[in-house]
Image (cartoon, rainbow, N blue to C red; front, side):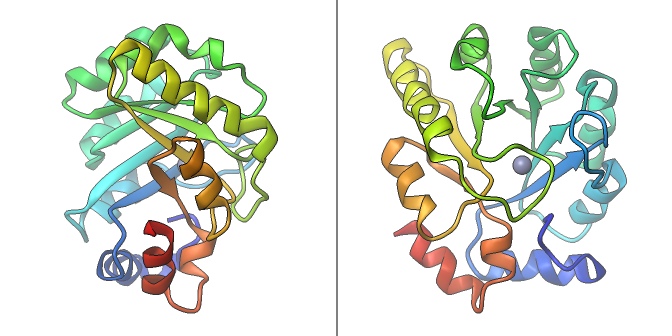
Length: 208
Ligand code: ZN
């Protein structure tokens, strides 16, 4: 939603649905964990009010544990928190699950895969950031991030787990193929869909 036209949220969400998107991804930024500020639970609630689609809420905030309840109330279907944020990670993940939400863990390009390993049996989505988070429209960091997507896939197989592997940042018709080849199955695309000539055609090509 970061790349959508915010003056027409309802129409933009409907356009994404009609054109074949599966989920709506919402990037929450606090101006502290990342430099940019985006939106809070009120915006998530506004999106919830205009769709029954799956709301995939990505919290790029320093204290995700403090705001979980508000995002659950706002209508999030899944909440993803960062391993680099300041919180008791296992406890936050447990609280998300107890609230009945899907539960994701994210890691930045500079973070080692080993940092998420202790939590992989507690999540249903691993989010590998493919850009340094904060702004839309950045370039995909293949060398730094694709080994982590592959590691996530290998770990899942070795340990009999079944989490999604999501990539976020710089995803377009070219990079989607690279990410899929390494094992990602959930692609977050903003600029390359909302600013495309035709969203439906782009989504169809990405699926391919
Ligand atoms: Zn995101």
